[in-house]
Image (spheres, one colour):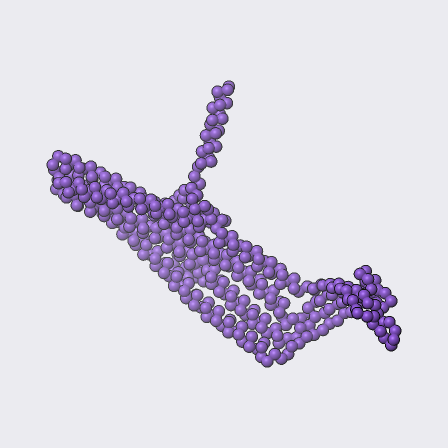
Length: 435
């Protein structure tokens, strides 16, 4: 029984240790979701949204009455006199309570409230835009990382082929069938391939660290990003992409909201043309001591209420010119919005064409890789049969490695073009699946 308990404890300890040291694995979708939760830029943008929500509540509160109080003490140098008689005290205390209710402010309060709502909506659009940009950035780096890993595999295969060729060259040289130059050329190529493999592995580590940073993780986090490069046709036409961009692109929405905010500023600028109407209520208590309970020369309490209008009807054109300035700002933002629309359309079409280009590259690269593998196989067979040269083998091997890199690059470029297209349409597609 004791042996059984010890074995059970050892098994549990091994299981716990394995779980503790196991690598965290993430697909592209997992990486995107983690980035949206942890990236500091997104978290900061969300704080701005919380702040804008308080701004809406503050502007709404301005519709209600404002209440204030004042409590003070006045000491006179001598008693007030009236017709030779004492008319007051040296010590005077007063408590005042005021309620102020705006009734009409030239639409200023209403417009300010509507503007705060628009600002909140604009901040939400800015968060959406920041999230979209982060998603595209994560997907681009993720695809580059997958490409870099494929390049490492290709470099390892290339090195293995070169080492195999070096063994053949060495064996042929030792029996006098080939000159020493063939063996030396093979050694140089092996050394070069080893260096290229080191560079490829370093690129993988660099991209992994960059992806960790985008996800808000420690740069040295030991995370395994899983996935593979692939190809699937895009189920959208250019016209559909342009329509989606016009509807969902966050920066276009932000630009439209900026125009609406500028129009609210025009209304605010016109507020100076109108009178300001408000109601006010005041309550007073006086006394010769801090309790303000009245006295011989003080009224215990009194109140008054009034409705008044304040109208500044002439300011040498200040309101007029302010209105014209606000109207010109509306026109400026409208022109900038039209320019942004043109830029968005160009970006969508550019990404759409890049997808088409990358798809054609994939087809050509696959055909080229098939031919390169066959060429290398034939070059090795000819060399071993003593009818080919070492240079032919090395050239064929280099061509196969270049073809593999070309195919990896085309597949990665296709995926990144897909990510860029969805980003330019304002569509969040964490897995880059057809939508």
